Length: 627
Ligand SMILES: Cc1cc2nc3c(=O)[nH]c(=O)nc-3n(C[C@H](O)[C@H](O)[C@H](O)COP(=O)(O)OP(=O)(O)OC[C@H]3O[C@@H](n4cnc5c(N)ncnc54)[C@H](O)[C@@H]3O)c2cc1C
Ligand code: SF4
Ligand code: SF4
Image (cartoon, rainbow, N blue to C red; front, side, top):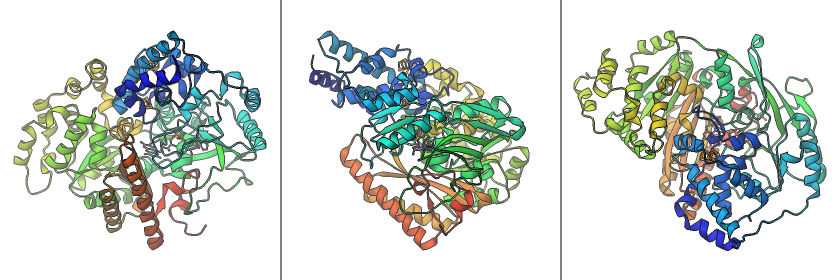
């Protein structure tokens, strides 16, 4: 069989190819967030290529004729034992079943070999030999089957190039030696965490330094800190901290902590209490472009605390090889509530007041898109959830607030009707029933003049549970029947419906681009209702003009309510080339709109100007006007 026949046969499996090309590169198959384990070959070989994500890319690259069949291609294909673990993680976050792609990949490659298909040898490369002298034979490659997993993400406005090498150093000394070697040879390089930034950031036409082997975690409880290596993900350190009775400030579970701080300043719903940027850490160690080490606490260290609000995206300055982040106490009486609002202005007023009065630990305003996508276990149900909360209940905005008993009592004293933990659990487990349930209509009948006043009825959580039940089997009834037993058991676990746990480990927000990828506009600004409304209307108009879906994402207050962080998302179909052109234009106009507002007001800071500088001092980021 020749390469063209292989391409043809792989393309004929249209559904499989579409699944392979729908991998969002969000790396949820690299972390054990459901307790069912992670791909054994990925854990052993560490290259993304040996994780489900990499095999999805390998299938797509072979089907599109981008790469030949090589020895690594066979090793990656054979390395999958079809255990099916990836289906759980991937279905939870993306509603995909990678094992079907893996099965097809094995079948096509076996067919190719059985029909006399050849294996292409990779020519000798002198620089690769030198790189391997630093990291060891196994930990660097230029095989196209390896490179295919480091070559692109779904970002629509980046021109991707295949890297020349993927290298997996294990120590800072190895990174320093690599930087010196690559510099002498004039080869570009980029640091890569889990590659989940999804905005075309962790790519290079030279060497990709995948730091995922650097997984050290050293707790120093006396000094309320933990020092993590650049391969440690948010989920991993949060889990380890929780086992010791602490909390750390982390955001997306698959994001590596060092990368997250460097990229966005690490924005979590705990930002009102724990801050962003340099608030997150005590010290950090870097290797500069000259291959020399420095710590931020040294008097002579380069000033990475600086923030320049340049209208040009900042380049990679240094590689963070460890960061010492803060441990925070956890209270035994913490709980979460959802406070509903019929308008963004009211949700902003409430959130600002809570932040200014320092009420609550985590505060976030969620719009209907995030509410529906996060809560629903499938894309189909997400449409129902949107309708239920937004139209039927008249709650297009929910403020998720967590805190101790004192904080939650204060929220109640402020007079807002709210969904407490018990009611949330019942509504959540019964999502598939709610649309057709007459029960929601009855709520109107027990309301007075205050909007959502039925939520103040003390018996409501018990009545809801009696009327709807509390079985996780209801929630999973639309899930793929083969996976349903696993998920029914999963959702019965108390933490999966606990607002504090959900908010701390953030596993539901990994569903955010489940239906379609997005381009996100993330920016810091004052909680000025008129300004926020104007910007949102501007984005909505851009989305309508370019016929793409545009949705409010979230707003979290910062620094006692003086500022907030706002995310708005433009969604697009990455498989439609014409829509990709429209999303590029929409994203460009939206960025320009924010630049204009910044010129007019001097108070807007876009995260795209923060990339590679997220470790900066928060005050420089939010308030400094002179560079
Ligand atoms: C769906 C989605 C939701 C998100 N939500 C949030 C959110 O709520 N809050 C938030 O803060 N972010 C959020 N992000 C951004 C994302 O979490 C960050 O971009 C994070 O950096 C991803 O981690 P990673 O390990 O995958 O980084 P990568 O994608 O591997 O790298 C991101 C960038 O960091 C650089 N980098 C990686 N490691 C290092 C290092 N050790 N030293 C120096 N530079 C390095 C890379 O070169 C690249 O420029 C979101 C992203 C997506 C796609
Ligand atoms: S969609 Fe996410 S979980 Fe699924 S294979 Fe891709 S990276 Fe892994
Ligand atoms: S099915 Fe294959 S790719 Fe998926 S987890 Fe198992 S071994 Fe890994």
